[in-house]
Amino acid sequence: MSSAVPLEPWPPKSLSTVLVSASETILPSYASTKISAPAPLVFSTLLDTSTYPEWNTWCPSVTIAAQPDANFDNGSPTTASSPGSQHSPVLQKDTHFTLHVIMDASKPSKTTDTHLRVTDISIPTKQSDYIPVPLLQSPSFTQNLAKVYRVAWTVEGGFVALGLRSERFHEVIVLGQEECEVRTWECLGGILI
Image (cartoon, rainbow, N blue to C red; front, side, top):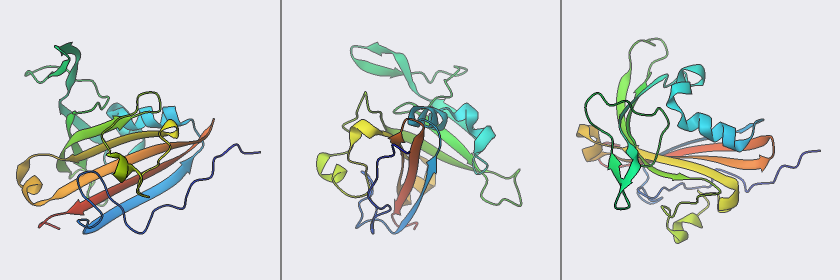
């Protein structure tokens, strides 16, 4: 007998993110799947970029450019971005990173660099206030924050960022002790779309 919690049908007719509203979205993309594993394990795997070569054939490598330091100065995080510094492979809020993306499976050695910044991380025991409450009520997001692990990132820097508005969300939703659903969606808008 499964202890899974039923979810509302997903995806909704229109998707949105904090940075790209449903009305501004020109090209949405989305996927979801159920996984027979605990949600915290799935989420920690998603955040740990050193595991990507083991499971992510689309993006087998990541470079962390800068991320907040564990030390806080007057309550504000400091950025560990000095040359030669070793960054953790685990994504944190405000991590600047590059996904080395394989856009053509027939040419796996050719990658396209996509520069990104983590805009949000939320877990059941440390819920974020990044998503405004009215937006959280939209069908894009899982509303029960006690059951969802969430990370989001946006395009950062370069020519593409000037004409592209983009934000990707990943939610890992607790369905049972050994089962979760992973939802991912990206909303793209701007003149380059």
